[in-house]
Image (cartoon, rainbow, N blue to C red; front, side):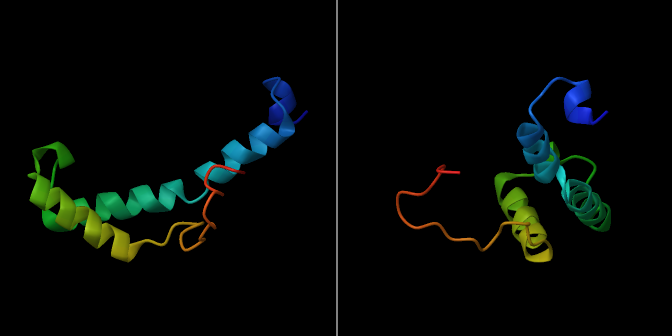
Length: 79
């Protein structure tokens, strides 16, 4: 029995959720590693400028699965 059937959800929805979660662990590991490297215990403790710097650095370290895919005008959300 597939998990989609077990939870009584359509297989397509299950696959979409599964695809969305791929790479999440890798990203979270990068966040934790950068926080440890910088001695940050909580992102809430950072000023807006420090948060911007943190996430700019993180963004340079991580390439999202669909990053770089450009949609033509009017296609946003058309999936």
